[in-house]
Length: 294
Ligand SMILES: NC(=O)c1ccc[n+]([C@@H]2O[C@H](COP(=O)([O-])OP(=O)(O)OC[C@H]3O[C@@H](n4cnc5c(N)ncnc54)[C@H](OP(=O)(O)O)[C@@H]3O)[C@@H](O)[C@H]2O)c1
Image 1: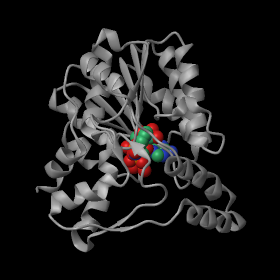
Image 2 (image 1 turned 30 degrees about the vertical axis):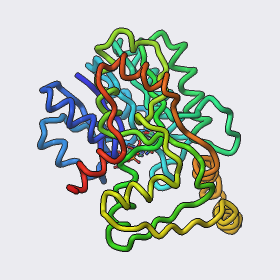
Image 3 (image 1 turned 180 degrees about the vertical axis):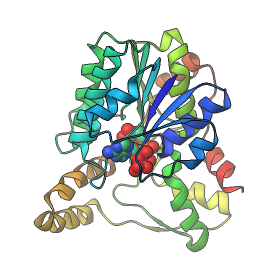
Image 4 (image 1 turned 60 degrees about the vertical axis):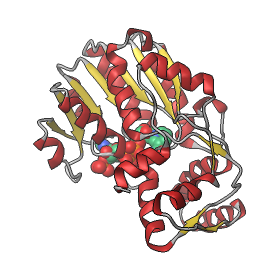
């Protein structure tokens, strides 16, 4: 039995769907308020709980063989300290107690770069270290930005032709197909050479951020109108928000880190991924065309 946390998220849903399409038993950890009927209809066992409660985590881990930690944080559901950090530490402890055979952790590309202003990155790095010394067989996937994040922006572009690009248009990233990442997260348990490894995970191409509106333009056959405010605009908003809401100001630190830095994988890292997991990674354009039907 697999346990998937964040099972209603962009990535988690795909992981559960893939496991069920292979007829594998899966327990989906969900909040009562989440939309989880699709997962139930696919035959997932639903485990209702809150990752901020260690008793719920312990219960969810009973009888589990493999765990895939795919939940994320936001201020509404619990911040980086309670979800990216504490919930994962509790999961690892519960996994050990339950003699789990493999623990898959979704981290983030750049978790090891020491970004001081980014609580999610710091939490992920601390959890990676804890997992590495836990004695559990593990695989850590450090993805760049998900292609599925771009679907709502693509829909807006389809209507208006406008693309909002904050910060340096030359910054590079390697957007990963969320479906490819789900496949790696599922396969990691059964691929021995993926055990006790950390993988940077990106798509097959290094894109400049300014390439994305042009890909949208190709997909929808329309010239992009690029609106490009400087990063200073985010800083201004952040300072203003900070006066009223310190937590949101802290969260915006992670957002700013994502905008201000480059997140891409080298061709060698991509070749290593494709070799280990045995399939060819999907380009952003292919992903978008598949989902948008164009
Ligand atoms: N998105 C990216 O570009 C990106 C890039 C690199 C790494 N990552 C990492 O990849 C992972 C998955 O990201 P994602 O974009 O798929 O996440 P997401 O769509 O934001 O989903 C977050 C999931 O966590 C669940 N969750 C939040 N608080 C919870 C709580 N207190 N108890 C139980 N469940 C809770 C949410 O449940 P509800 O449905 O109830 O809210 C949801 O299922 C995260 O670890 C993220 O840090 C993401």
